[in-house]
Image (cartoon, rainbow, N blue to C red; front, side):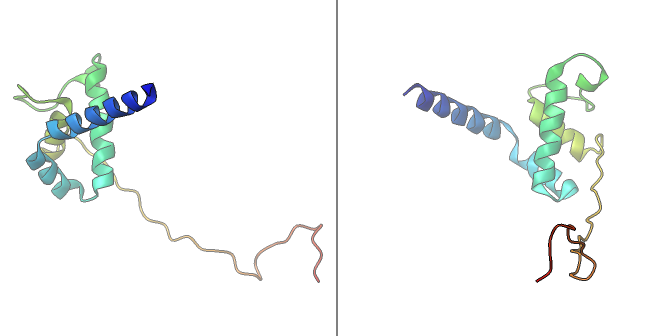
Length: 110
């Protein structure tokens, strides 16, 4: 019974966090980033930095942050090009062919 209560509380927190993020900021940030998975990773990393406090990384890079949560600040930083990121190149993976593949010496051919 207790685990159910903990699970319920965590789902409420997730809904509250999602509700707190401004939907228009998310749409504008998606226009810049294009991939929603990358956007989530960028925002979550930046929120951790903002919430950690000390040092230069913990300070917001945008002005006028009154009444904004950490996620909204991170989204505004992306929209205003205050935060950069690089998308890695997609490499095409190749499989070795039967001729090029080596078998361990203890395997015998039948």
